[in-house]
Amino acid sequence: MSTQPISLTRTRRDPFSVLFTGLTGVATLLILLILAVILGNILWHGKEGLSWRFIFSMSDREMFDVNQAGVLPMIVGTTARVILMTIIVLPIGVITAIYLNEYAHSTSIFTRIIRGAVNNLAGVPSIVFGLFGMGFFISFIGGRLDAALYPGDAEPHWGKPALIWASATLAVMTLPVVIVATEEALRAIPLGLREASLALGATKLQTILRIVFPNALPGILTGGILAISRAAGEVAPILFTGAAYYMAGLPKSLTDQFMDLGYHVFIFSTQSPNIEQTRPILYATVVVLLVLTFALNFVAILVRARMRKKMRLSH
Image (cartoon, rainbow, N blue to C red):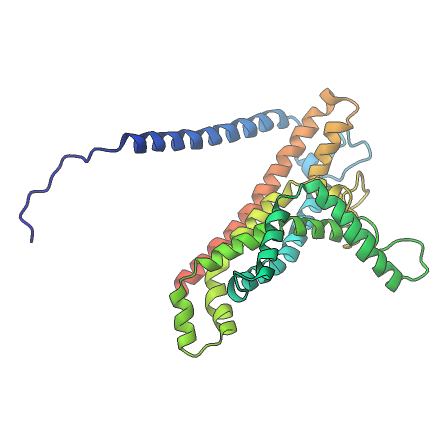
């Protein structure tokens, strides 16, 4: 046992470290302050238009009338397109990431082309995805489905703006987020786990399905949460692919159009006959959109937390 006295004097801190710590702290507080100001401003102006009738009533043709406006169809439409988008993008993104991380050779030209495509896809403006969805999903896929399933029918069934095409367009837009997050989650799994599984006689596929994938699942769900966060507030990709200005009822099938909260905010911002009179509805709709986005994220975070807890207990 050492008999030397323990020095109680503090070590001198590097002034540059202190300055860097202070700058990062100020930057973090600045972000929180900006967020608080934005949310406070929206809540302050939106409280006049918020009511149970506004949230749970159907939209009327007189949507600019404060006494008749309702956002229930927009809430249902936004929730449906986000859930459908998540169902489409997660399997495709996860399988692609598993191939890139577990099977593909990192130095091959094919792998580099895929990674380059994913990186470039992340930088494409969202309005371009809307035009892509209109051309590829509606005209190409939808048009051919109509020709094959409904020959001779002049009315389009699949070749028109619809909930399924808007969700598929959003899935393409958020695909890079899911792929990158899943790859990071897979890389975080220790190599020793893979080697131990292979040493015990498991095949590579069994190792991936039973060891790697379950341990990476919380990170994969993080990618899903990021995709939901981005898709929930996007408007440009759904302008041409599924969002409707007005609908008398809720969408009943995947081929129906839908009303959307983000598109509704866009309408109130650009086509309102009286800006001052409809301002409370505009801010109240923004409040509902933010609450819905936070609620969808909260549900995804809750699922991820339950899976982490289940994994800790199983270990």
